[in-house]
Length: 534
Image (cartoon, rainbow, N blue to C red; front, side):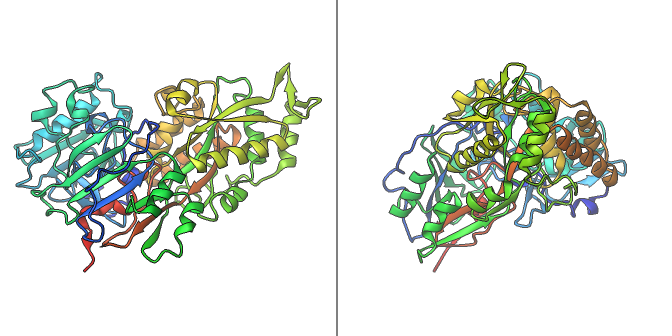
């Protein structure tokens, strides 16, 4: 791979944007009076659903770019192409694909005025890979053997094996060594009061309420015109819509049915972003019902995905048969599973799951019943869960839907099913490794189903350890075909993200988005480039 070929890399992890979020249930609060100056264009308040657990790049924040407080060596533009950020140019890549050399931008400072240099890059990557650092995504840097500084303005990465999407991994936010190295990486003040090189400076974080930012006047890319930016954390979809309508918010992410209510509002505009964001049901290996392959296969064809797209998403999405969207070049044709209730019943009959007196199937004294958790206040998850349970009931499987916060749900994930979400644009390694690798079962929100399939494990390793695209395609074809044979998850839909914003600014657009949306993705992914309308 050459430096020229790197220019063609499309944005794989790009808009994943918010890091490995352990999403916390959030209360609602009104923005502080005076935070907004509607119509003047120097202030914006947007409503988002979730907040990060940390603001430290060392713990996962900003690992996929667009963190606002920080920059990476590279960044993604509106077309999801890699562009230089803290690097002065795209990297030079050795012929064997094992060495990436970055020349750094000169004259960049952190928001505290201290200069940025190569040592900050080395510190960031080495700290993330340190065994003592609680970064849930460190396996994404498994290919990295070493990183070293050559003077103040050059960084050289050496890989253990050719890793095709490594350049995309260098959108990871860079932390200042002079601050972060002097405190506990997992619990020090830097985790909530970060200093970075980015276009915005954090002025306050009220957990469960809001994150407040001000423009960095010394930003290397030019001081943003939106001088104050606030993210109000509002877990409940209905409350977000109400506050947008009342004028408390300048913009918000909304489910399609709520966004429709603003269609005739001349002062607001709706933006739809295509995504890799899927909704799926985890089928834990350690549950006697969901761990049964016949139950998994039956649910896979009992579910009416198209009905979910039509009725729940109102057309803003498409059926999902795995983490890879059907319109991706990495999707394996022929792995689509059509809705077939008759086939679902046949699979269960042949496996010995026989209908009981109440119509619910039983095998060896075990009733085909299990709970399905979804996140409180998330209407899309609730509606997906209810539709899934309804489809399952027709096949003789009894699913009880339950709402809860992540604090309630996470301890139950080993045994109970969860209406979960995920998705990263572009490279299949970004999605599938953390989702399906057996060694990551029980590792936070990685492999929530504790999926364990040796053929999938081998294919995941094969796919990430070569630059040969044909070999990689074959590996990920294997993964997708194995998910047909033994689906550890029931993938339901890929959803489009819908945002409604007031029309005070120019320069708004959307990128192809990941699952983690609202925080740094959305039409405000480039808020630093917005300009007030005259």
